[in-house]
Amino acid sequence: MAAELRERLVELFRWVDPDPGASHLVSDISGWWRDPVTLAALGPALVAPFRSARPTVVVAPAVTGFLLGPLAATALGVGFVPAHKPGDGRLPTGPLTWAQSPPDFRGRRVDLAVRDRHLGPGDRVLVVDDWVATAAQVRALYDICAARGAEPVGTSTIVGDCPPALAADLHIHALLTATELG
Image: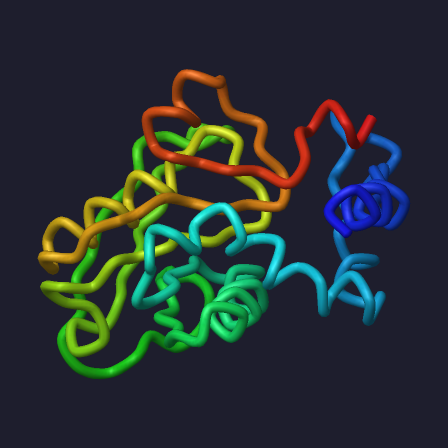
């Protein structure tokens, strides 16, 4: 099934020219969400490399992480904790633990927060995201885990585009590389 899923992810992916004056293409992953077979397979595929680490919770950043995180959590039989960004809508109420990422692929620093009551000592955290290029958000989420006394067991992503040494250091597993997407 893994090879079939990888083929389907590549088939459903598109690079899109956002406008005539754009200097780069933009990834279009919407086909992944539209295809029911792919959508059903993503959660189990993302968690497979980390099952033996026995995660107790999945954490994922807004926005697409809010789709992938619950798929992964359901596949593991654990809960999901969303990591919010200030610009992505209404922030949750109550105490939050914040971290700021190092610069990402656009040079931005991203602020992320999770509700304190949903992450704490003893939690073994699997981070899930759709695309990891610089691992900036992964680092911020690992910082939140450390601040809350939780242990990150690794990160699972659909597309991994970071250097192999960084992926190894942060225990990042990708279903595909950006090169495979053309």
